[in-house]
Image 1 (cartoon, rainbow, N blue to C red):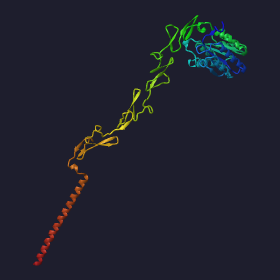
Image 2 (cartoon, rainbow, N blue to C red; image 1 turned 135 degrees about the vertical axis):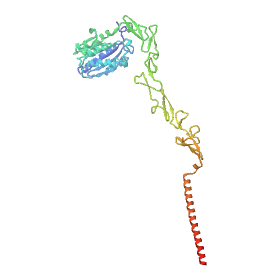
Image 3 (cartoon, rainbow, N blue to C red; image 1 turned 180 degrees about the vertical axis):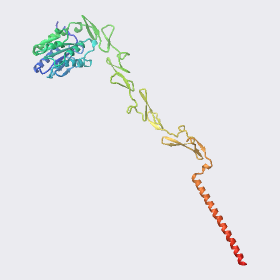
Image 4 (tube, rainbow, N blue to C red; image 1 turned 90 degrees about the vertical axis):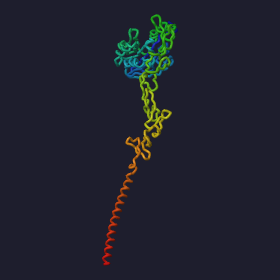
Length: 409
């Protein structure tokens, strides 16, 4: 087929390149040229083939994931800046990192219902220094197709262990990095697909899925296929049963985000909600008392205060205002409280509220009673003295008279 007629099928393609110390700097440059030429043969784009590059030795580095570049020039520029890591050959670690860190929707891998093949091309010149067999088997089980490219001293048994079946279509070998470019045409033939989806002669509005010699149409996430089986319509992702939000679902460009009612906060799972303490310090504007009420709150006041019309602040009440106390006669304010008293001529009853008219005896105070007793005692003393003086005076007069009579005789 001619270049114009043959387009590769859409892929999520990840290159894993060995840059251990056994790969000399000039050989690593050859690998980068190979990557650039491979990119040239691909139908690169957001809706066609997405490309990621990983660099490994004893450690693994994702040079760029599937979501970063969707044009060849940017990809090739990024490839030209890759530097070797120069230590070890941890091939198993690199494949596992591809599974865990690159083949995820967050990093640009398309959803499974798109039926986009996930492909890995491993390029190495040595024997893995870790257990690659189980890791590769798990990756293949997860739907990842693995191609193994060996150069020079590469261990062929290791290449066959990691590659997908059939092995004669997934294991490649070249003598030196100087001739690795010749594999470009082989991969082009492998990835070239003479089907309706790849050639662009289908009438699917969004996604074309190859089906033997025919095709089926599908839609992106957040869309549904119309009855004509070709076009797509945006679905109401917030319709009942379509989302996982606990309280509020908000449509967001074919997807959705969850929110919560007032008085609730979104949990770390970004789906469920928890009632927050609306009366916690700093969350309300009540001057004195905050009362929770099913996710909201209302304000109240301490005893002796009343809520102002703004429903937030409080004012001290007049405890002795009519109707606010139970004193029968006199109410006496005492800060935020009150005591009862009586008018003159009345005394407070034991209930400390009502009053009774005072008796006459009760009008004399203790002090006055003491004065009266003192006066009475004084009067008794004076009377006694007067009586004593009178008796002496009478005797004196009698004696005087008797003396005179005696003298006369």
